[in-house]
Image (cartoon, rainbow, N blue to C red; front, side, top):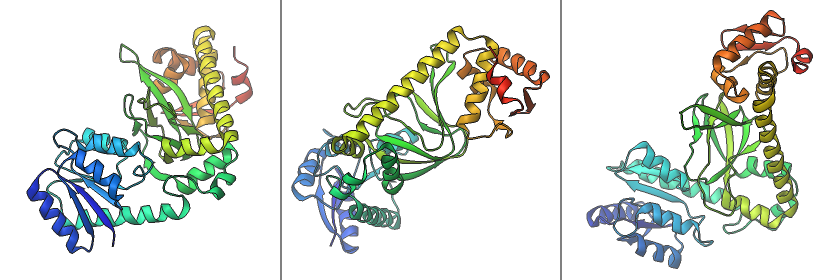
Length: 349
């Protein structure tokens, strides 16, 4: 029999929910507040936790945050049960690492279904990864950055985004590391005047989303899908375990970070010293590469995104692209741009 820890300060709702879960053949432990809930979670190690958000002294966000720091409890599936239905509340809970979010008043079938699915997922994960650490066999298998990517494919959560969707926003809790299975992503910031600056572009089979592996700091930029995109992600805690046990992977990840810094410097130098023509040409080529297009395939990208990466005004970019079109270097149809002469585009100075 699976054990559920129910943390809820409303006595009537707590008793009614506990009775419902017991009738569904679960052993139920109850706590009337967050502090008691943390103690019971540590003492009993339940199979899953269902927790209210709005509670005195210690709310549900703090409960999950505290349990996530502890080796014994950080992998226990966690479901929020709350009357808070605003999108930012849901996003905050999921960014902290919650597995699901059920709103009050809840449908009994929805609650039982959510619990069953999360328990099933936890059972599957336990077959491939130990609750508190990677198995020795997996440690031996993860020796390179490519091995790490394969590990994400096998063990990560798959998430789909449509073109234009935010993957995360600047200031949000940085809980996950992402690998692009399909699509492309831009990372970007807004300056004090509200103008967007694209800081990085990522294509298929590239990692992104890493801020700090040892400090709990928020994302320093936003990330958006620039085409329909599929990602797989793992938590920073899992990645930290991999790096602690596989120093070669850590070194390769450091090299990846170094390369990213070098690319950012190159972009800044181009924005500072490159001619308008060179900035525009190199930006078109960069987007073509990141979108995995061959030179004769059209790329569909906004003029604002192109101008942001190039570091020039949108009007200036459009005039330069019109010049390239007249010179037979590119073809333009609506938002579509097709490179006609890649070598000449590369040689522009």
